[in-house]
Length: 529
Ligand code: HEM
Image (cartoon, rainbow, N blue to C red):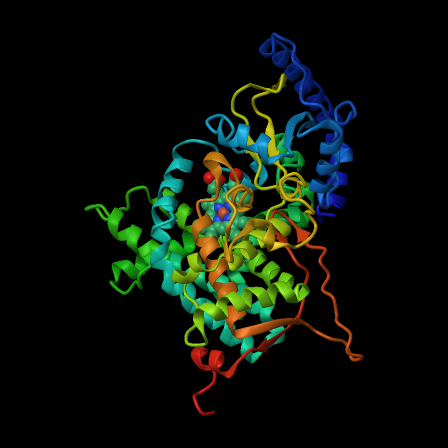
């Protein structure tokens, strides 16, 4: 439970009658408007029957709601209609429905639902999770696409490879700390690309501050469900009416939004003015957008776009690399097959680099299976429908929140037979001994990175980062389960915890070096030692 619950209940004693009246009026006027916009009287998409006023809110579990949506998908179909406290919510349970609506009708399905508490009052208005269609969104996406499109990401190959090797070196020194080292290295990578920062330790104040910032809003529970989100005018009241902790939480959220947004950008601006800024996305944009009067053109769009590298790019990539480590320790035969493919190519003479990617179809299939098997964002990021629409003879009202159930799509047995089995071979075909990727099987990257005009602009960078980490770790180590004192395998807890991004609980693996030549290449063992 979010910690504001107790104080909320006090405040609600006063506010409840007013809230109920406002919900009622809101629902009646919504019903009247919807009727006039839907002259054919088409039904809304089918869904479970809810309660008056509350709608389905009591039926949607706080934990792992995608499982319930998947179950409802089996009853009501691939598109489900719900209402949550008067708000229309559409859940897309199949890839086909998401492709038809979010991709093919992207012009009207690419909004974001407002979340006034976090975005307006909490200072996170620049986060693309909340930015609606318009100039601010397009400006940020233009910058991110310029830096991270499929060919532009090649210029980051060196830093990605260097960081993957550093992760392997850290892991060699303390294998039991792989999970923490993974987070350190992914964060170090994105902060270097974004601002040119050098982060080398988990205790680095930048790491601590960035982590505190990213979790600063988690005390709110599900974004968009606080009474202030439903009735933004309530945010004008002093925050202490929701309790002291809540008021402090909002302050921390505002500080967090500044710490990972404007603050690092201002630092690089000073460095650039002093002529000491290391190369980075920030310094490049500051130089190219500086105007003769000393200001920076589109400054807010620029610092907002850069900030996404950390808070959209690190937690997500960390999750995928963790899933890779867990999948390998649980599936040693698959691990061996991927290592064999790498060994055949590298012959113990060198470590992998990103130019090897196309030559290793089995490893590519493992990467796809990792993104499918443990979706990083099981419900993606909600889209918003900006205009009324009709789909499969149902009426989809403008303003609906559109959730796509990436979990249901990833475990759809029609797309991926035997979906609960970790099986990279599902993506491969073998023709006379030559293995290649099947074109007729959906690539899970087309689910994992979202849809349409909001599709993840960092997907090429993320995919390259995941791949080079996988290839390097597999070349250097066997990843094994750790054992208890009696020699039995200790199985990791595979029940992930999810806020927006899904993560495994703390786990440990045994990373055993495979050969002295790999260690020599890594630089942790001197030749002859
Ligand atoms: C494995 C790693 C990653 C995964 C699984 C992932 C996944 C996603 C998903 C599902 C969305 C929502 C798409 C939608 O609304 O349809 C998204 C949006 C976004 N991602 Fe990623 N992402 C990853 C890494 C990155 C990286 C490295 C960056 C850095 C550039 C990044 C930047 C963004 C941004 C800025 C958005 C918001 C786009 C918008 O609203 O228009 N992501 N990502």
